[in-house]
Image (cartoon, rainbow, N blue to C red; front, top):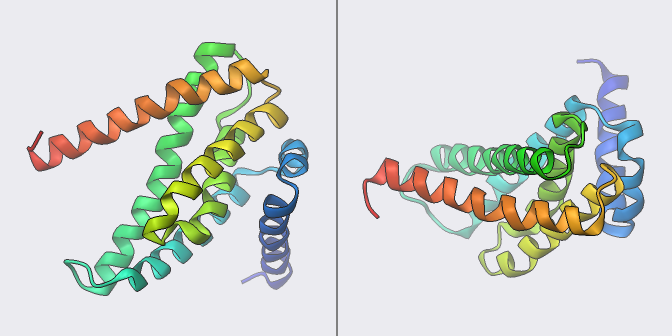
Length: 177
């Protein structure tokens, strides 16, 4: 393992968490200059790992703890991917902006990652989801340069589409409506 690289990544992640909590507008304004897909993937992996470990504290699942941890991890990381794909597609359809998918993935990765730190608590969903979408809105405004109306439109269209995709996937897998 490259120790200076690992320390640099750890410094970026810890500073990212602090900046997202204290000054999210400035974090997203600076994001295009410091963003890499690797950092966003690393942040997603760290936060999803934390979410998976913390999720095991909510009680026993139907499977062994290692299987449940894997399910929690895949769920957390998968939701970032699904959200970013629907958000990116919606952004392109609405604004025609040519911002890359990597940056939009970063917006969702950082917004989702910071909320994963407390969203493993079942009752916190009512606080973390609006906070996450406000962070994504802030990211679209600051990092992608969308107007208020376009940033809100992206969220108002992509979130229900995302819910429908997830519902149809659950229906297809379980066979229940």
